[in-house]
Every structure is written in C-alpha cells, then in structure tokens.
Length: 278
Length: 278
Picture 1 (cartoon, each protein chain N blue to C red):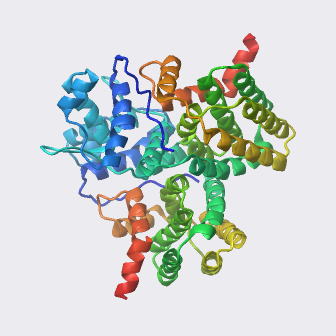
Picture 2 (tube, one colour):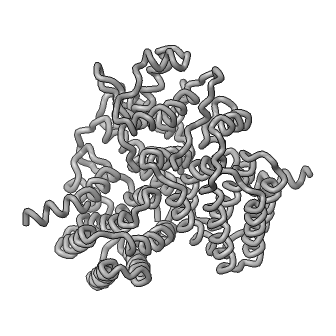
Picture 3 (cartoon, rainbow over the protein chains, first blue to last red):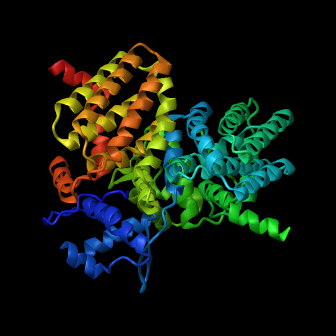
C-alpha cells in the first residue's frame, strides 16, 4: 500500500501559500519521484492549479530551501531524494530545547534497536555481517575518538538497516547525530572499550547464526555499556572536541552530514569495494 | 547533560552559506531558545562572525522558511519553539518514496509504543488517565471515520506522552500523520471496532493500576487489531476520503497540522477544561 495524497479534489479551492506548498509536496513531488522526471513547468502548474506563476515560483523556492527539490536554471525543478538528515536536525533541535539527556536517548535506542535486532537476525545478508565486522575493526584499531564514535554509530545503523524496515531505519537515523555528539564528548575508558568490543562481537556472531534472541540480548547489553560511556564522568573539554571535529570534517559539513557520510562509508556496497581492494 | 554545539572554534573559518546556517541553527538559536530573547541583530551577527550582513540576512530568511525562526519586522528574529511536524513530513515523505507499507509502520509503532507503555505505567498521572478515557469515548460515540481515526491516533500519542521521554515522543509523533492516513483509508468493521474499544479500555485500566506488563501486553494486542484495520480489504474510495478531510480541515491545514491540533485537543490540560465545562 502506498500513502494516499492530501485531499485531491476536483473542486476549485482557495489556494494559500501553505496549502499550495503542501499540495506540491505531498501530491506532485511523490509522483515525480517515482517517475524520475522533472516537475511540471511553472507555467503548467500555474495553469493546472489556477494560481499565479509568481506564487508557484515562490512556493517552489520555499521547497528548495527545505531541501525537497533542486531548481536547475534552464533545466527544470527536480525532486531531491528524501533524506533523514533534516529529520535528524529536528530531533536534535528538540533534544537541545528540551534539555534531553543521555538516558532519554538510550531509552529510545533500546526501543528501536531491541526490536530491530530480532528482525535483523531473520533478514541480514553475509555482506552485511562482513560490513558490521569491519566497523568493529575500525573502531578497535583507531586511537582517534571521533573515528571511534563514528564507527560505533555506523555499527548500530547497520544493524537497524539489516531489519529491512524503512520506517525503523529513518527513525533510528534521526538519532545518529545526537548519539555521535554525546559519544565524542565523553571519555571512553580502556576497560569499557574492551567490554564494548566484546559485546559488539557477540552481536555479530549472533546475527551470523540468525539467533534472534541472542542478537537482541547482546545488543541491549551493548547499549547499557554505551550508556555508561555516554554518561561518563570526565567530559572532554569543548575545545578538544571542536578541534577534533574540525580536523575530521571540512568547513561546509555539519555533524548530520558527517554521520550520514560515515554510514555510507560503512554500507555493504562500499565495504565490498574496500575488501576487494585490500 | 545538554547537547554540545557544532564545532565552536576561535579560529576564523571560511563561512559558506550552509556552514553559517548550521552554526546559527545549532549554536545561536539553542542559546536564545533557552534565554527566551530574540537573536542578536543582523549587524551584531555579521560583526561577530565576520560575514556580510546580506549573507546573514539570506541565511536568516532560509531559517524562517524552514520554520526555525520568525522574523518580526522592526522587532527582531525570534526562535520558534521546535515542533515535530516537519519531522513527521520528512518521515511521511520517506514512506511515500520507499513505498512503505502498513506493516513497516506497525512494526515501528510496536517498537516505540511497547517500550513506552512500560514507562507510561510507571509515570502517568490521573489527569492523563482521564484524558485517555475521553479519547476512547469520542472514538466510540462518533460515526465519522475521520474523528475515529484522529481520536485513535491521539490515544496512542497520549500513552507515549505519559512515558515522559521527549525523544520517544518526538519519534512517535513523526509517525502520527502516516498512521492517521492509513486509518482513514481503510474501513473499520463494527466487530473489529468493538474489539479495539475493549483492548484500549484494558490499556487504560492497566495504566491506572500502574501495571507495566499488562499495559504493554494490552497495547501490543491493540496494535495487532489496528494492523488488521489498516490492512483491511475494503479501502475507501479516494473521493470519499478527500471529501471527509475537506470537511474536517480548513483549506490551509495540512494532514500534519490536523493531527497536531487533534493531539492538542486531547492534551490533559484541554481535557480538564472540557471536563470542567461539562
């Protein structure tokens, strides 16, 4: 089943800027995303919907600002594939405004990842198991706390991806940047790091044998260890975190972009390429 | 613990439009949200950050378009309290693009609501239990399928709100519009409706007695009944759905706005007012 569109109706309606934006977003863009073509022209939209071209143009610019479409001058308006980066920003902003703590974040990850782990054990592929093992290698072989945090976030995102549920994946991805940030702020003691490696290996082993219960249990134990990490007593100084992020990311990258790029680097197709070139 | 901001650094950096927008969004806006004041003036931002006023103005307009700030001419730029409406839009858009089905949506709600139910049983207040009972009364006494769906969505949102975890609430809220839409599309047979009422009453009774396990179990049974509802064989004709939505919402309202308004109508404070006036 596909989601129905917003109130399609034959009756002429008094378009406002908001209702027109909603209509184009939820009716026009999805059709075009599926077809792979450009949106209808400004002129065509203005004639079909009975509104001025200037209103259509204004609304399209608003959609471009919100990252829904790309306006390519002289070529047309193209829908941008959906990304959960923006959802991650909103969730992170809500977290900041509400003074959200590590425990709220971990509770939500327990809910999502606990359920996802069972599905992952049913549905994962051998390539995905290889990719998971590689994220662990990278985390363990690196001394840099930004790399360690990024590899850890990628590990969990991959487990959820194995569950093959796009809604779970999108919801979980929206927590990636917040998780990453609280990890790079907290020191990871060596003994805790070793325990985390041990538990994460157990998750991979359980997934490889398709053992649902053992996967879910190992993942929940891993999350409890990460809770200890993220709640750790000795927070890193702000300036050290800032410098490390500055080295890891170029100036135009946001934390959300960085986490998304990290997840792509550890995707099964990228990992296969790395393994083939090794 | 509060979330750290994006790389605050003393080094001058080459601002791009994107990095400046990120900086203002994740560093400047959160500080102001907490203080309750307006953002620093355009002039002040341009001097502090070493960028042109026109770039600052452009970036602020972009943030306004994305619903992060309100620009009040002559008064200043004020942060808008975060809302998960936009996250709901993004999740819904992802669902549309990925051709997400009812089962993906229910799996995600099982993950979030199953865990939230346990916390809700520990943390809910008597007013919240009253509000939950009221949403059930409204659902049962209405013959209108839009009202029935809206009250059902509000019921689940309230249960999650009782869990007192802002991250769980935000993630769950982002599924509200998609859930509402799949409910108004599907016929709800009378016998299934009666079973749903029965199970939902059991959730309320279990919450009132603070029985974690019984709450979670009743909620999961309720979700299975809703899965049957939303997967129902006889989908309503598009035109009927469109007309009913048209009657329920004014022209400038999106489905997300409508669902948000519904949740506010059933919030404990609004319900107390209704009960006091009855």
